[in-house]
Amino acid sequence: MESINYHLELTPAQLKITHTALRSLLDDFGHDERAIEELIHEVLAKLPDEHAIRAIQLDRPVEPQAAEPTDGPDDSPGAAA
Image (cartoon, rainbow, N blue to C red; front, top):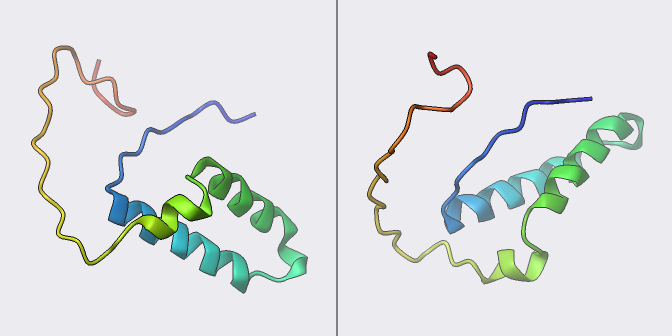
């Protein structure tokens, strides 16, 4: 059982590229690599559905996001305690 979880924030364009890359990777694996294929399906299931992904337009400019201030200590993996 895996106990480490990661939180990943992606822009809509990054999400679309990630989804497209995973779908392409899935198409490249053969039937003899069933465990990897299942893992890719598990990750794809966590992403928005196909219609939401298709609605993302890559040609739209992305506005930079300001970093949010943190009120507490860094709780990311590997942070010094």
